Amino acid sequence: ILFYALRPGFVRMQQPTVWHLFNLLTQLAFNTLVWYLFGAKPLVYMVMSSFWACSLHPCAEHFIAEHHLWDGLAQETYSYHGPLNVLA
Image (cartoon, rainbow, N blue to C red; front, side, top):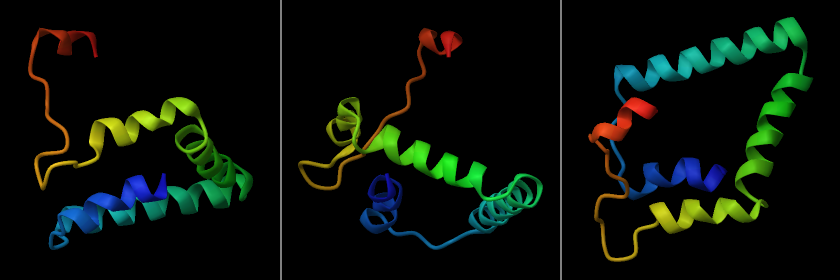
């Protein structure tokens, strides 16, 4: 999952913005609050849940099939703006 999360930053690098900083600070504040209130076990649980769900599970292969660039630097994913959005 770490490769999957960091890959876009290497494929299409961009300059950090204020929103990136806001996101980082929000995540640090939340994780610090969880650590302070509940200890390290919930954080370990969240990290390991992400790892197991997205690495060794056979269905996790769809990450590569759906998002890997095979022919140059085309758009990796596309937004859907159809009527099925009401279900999500």
